[in-house]
Length: 160
Ligand SMILES: [Zn+2]
Image (cartoon, rainbow, N blue to C red; front, side, top):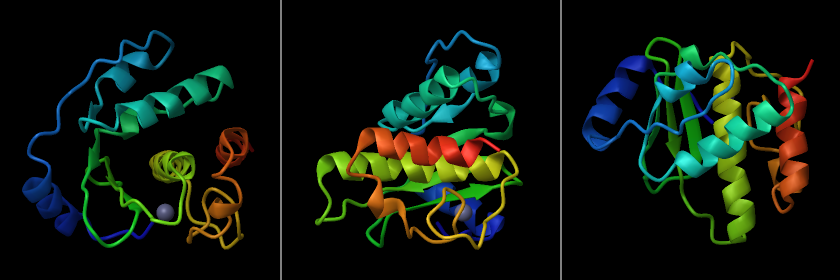
């Protein structure tokens, strides 16, 4: 979950994600129009919708206007995410970790997405260990084998 400089990010996306498409998930609640305007990379919609529904179910407001696109860049040096405040772009780099089950890997991607969306809402990193906005991934591996624990981990990061 490192951040890189925005200028590098833009070049990165330009080179690697020319086929990002704009989906219309047809969400209907308050704020849905901004959500529907987000351009989401092909294949990452299930995680985005899972996060969206988790927030809706728990009445947590997300300012979707702070996100212009969610792009997936599959590279070979680890799973991480980036949010650029300047471009409002979230970049997710998925990389299957051999020791993780499919369920854990899917939950890992959800946590990374939630962490980057947290940045989009103005949350900064905390020095606290094992919470959503921790700088490192410590603590994630304690929850991602279980869907409910994963969702509670994320919700805790979005509730004061
Ligand atoms: Zn971060």
